[in-house]
Image 1 (cartoon, rainbow, N blue to C red):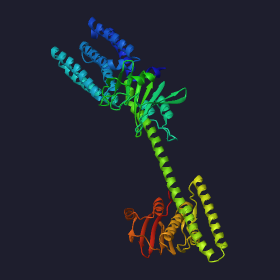
Image 2 (cartoon, helix red, strand yellow; image 1 turned 90 degrees about the vertical axis):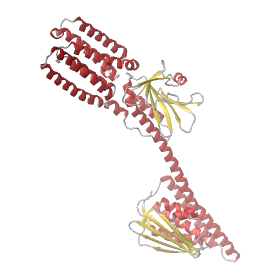
Image 3 (cartoon, rainbow, N blue to C red; image 1 turned 120 degrees about the vertical axis):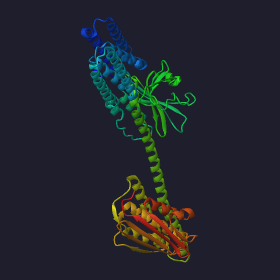
Image 4 (tube, rainbow, N blue to C red; image 1 turned 60 degrees about the vertical axis):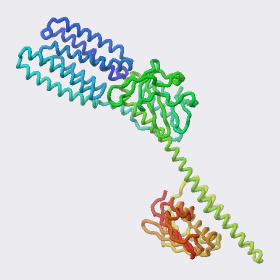
Amino acid sequence: MLAHAFRHRSGRVIALSRLILAVALLLGTWLDVTRFGERASIYALLGIYLVWSAIVLGITWSSWWRDHKLAVIAHAIDIGAFGVIVFYTEGTNSPIYTLFVFLILSAAIRWSWRETAMTATIVLMFFVGTHGTAILFEDANEEWAVLVLSTAYLIMLSVLLMWFGSNQPRAPRAWRMAESVPEIGSAAAPLQQILELAQRQLQADRVVLAWWQREEPWLNVSEIVQGSLETQRLDPDDYVLPIVADVRGEPFLFDMAHDRGLCRSEMKDGLPEIFYHVINPALARAFDLGEGMAIRVRAREYRGELFAMGIAGLCAEDLWDADLLGENISRLFDRAAMLAVSEEAAVARAKASLARDLHDSVVQVLAGTSFRLEALRSWIKAGRDADPEINALKAELSNEQRKVRDFIAGLRSGRDVSPVDLRAGMRRLAEELKARWNIECELTMSEVLPTTSSVQHEIQQIVREAAANAKRHGGAKLLRLEMSASDDDLSIKIVDDGKGFPVAGEFDEQKMRQMQIKPWSVHERVKRLGGTLLLRTGTMGTELSIQLPMGPQP
């Protein structure tokens, strides 16, 4: 109950403290006749101050607008009350210390160190000027030491209170505003999470989010109604952007009944600024935006305005922490956008990998089968028995069918990282290439070639593509494969005796890219494995030198 009553923190606390202080000053003055005497004027002034304090408390208790409008006036009257007490006090030992602390803390809590320093300067001038003049006229030399000492106390107290007020902890509110942003599981805009986060942090009865994408003309308005998310897509001609006043992207309080708002100053910690024509009136009427807080959302791909209504004890002080909520909402939008980009990149990588595998396996098998069928025709014309060759073709197609099934299963289950020795697989591959392309394969390998199943698949696809290119484009009859492993990398050298590329020479990846002569499928696989490719070609054949890292591959 008490916490709810003081939800409107600075305005209510200062107004209630002022009323209590006014009562105490009037009562103390009446009781301490020896100091103030029977002067009716001071009782009248303090009585007026008491009535004023009660009025301020009553009219600002639940209105952020009246609290802001009366803040400076009430503070000036407080300073005047301090002057009255100083004027009527005999000597420096008086109730001024209590009122002095109230003045400095009020300025520090409400505003910045500048207003606090200005308040301290004014009240010190009142104090020193009044008592200094009294001492001069009364020729009380013994009072100078007391005045100097009291002034020093007040200066020290001013410094301490300015520091305390400027560094006052807003921890409970700030922690709630800066709570960790929840995770999202979809690339779609996380609208329900955003609205629930805002409603929880602001303790608002109702939250409406008007948002749009940078590349889209539509204005969308989302709200949680009876526990379910409702989103309307509005025609851009109905509500032309921007839908709120341009106040430097700052959060602001709004009151549509009077079409006015309150935002932070350009100095951020100074007096709030008043402005008018705050929200598109048609939008405000359509979605019942009466009084509340607007928070700006500025993500990379999304823009928006969040309107929170029904916040208990709403006040200008809420603006200082609202940016944190806006940043959290922007992060949620950014995470959704990043997830969408990641999903698109993953799909693109999957498509590229699928294209490479289809090219280096199915397409090459079909090309090799066509090559062997052409040879089979000559075989039959020569009157030889075709059954062994036909059986060999059937076996190869059956083997390739099994590989395609394994490939599809691998797509479903993910990458296989089980350890394997590359040598056995390369021997079987050499036999396969000899049968498919009628090309001799010579293998030179280290004693141990450790890797993973997925990397072995990539290396075999590289060799298959190199063999197909050597036979189909270079007419090669011999393919030499040399493989050696060290602690850091795996070295692969593929040499054929074909006619080579049209342009002779040695080419690294940059030169191959410039000359547009790189074998694209081999290059992409090497790059994906984090390796390097060097090509040497001429009339005597082509050599591919590949270096692959031995660590875990992506």
